[in-house]
Image (cartoon, rainbow, N blue to C red; front, top):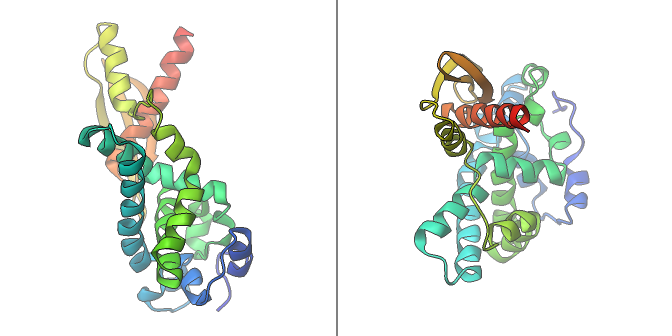
Length: 239
């Protein structure tokens, strides 16, 4: 099948990441979006979604184990906050972008035209599917080495004693309350995309004034991005 989305060959990514797949079909599957399967009359099982399911569990175990051993004095709450930040869709998408995964994705032309290749939701999912592919092909230890190398910068930051969670919604509420403002309200103003890959746009408002807007693959993710945009706006005004 030809690449509907015009991606580069998976073997090139394999070499760039220093991987050596025995079953290169697993790597191809990890990079295959459902839209590509639909446009090429393939089987739904050929997309990365099943691998994503497995990769989610594998990366959680690896990161949890690393934090447990790296932070012996950290309580359950502190470990959980770091774990949540490291494994957010945004964080995993950032790692995928840094690894240069996007050019190798197999996408349908329609989805490609909407900017899907650099979608945070897609890249976060693909990072999980790639991890699952490595796990199935090479086992746990090889996967662990890959994950800890790929996420080394984020893990190092999360293990710092002065680490604070990236929580724009809480920061925005705290900033507004400090200026005597009411709690911000979030409103979905648009939703689009197929059921398996939705895109929500949310605005955050205070006293009927829109402070920022953001988009994401879930309402929660869109709210977070709206809060992030509002914080940037408010800090620019007071800076």
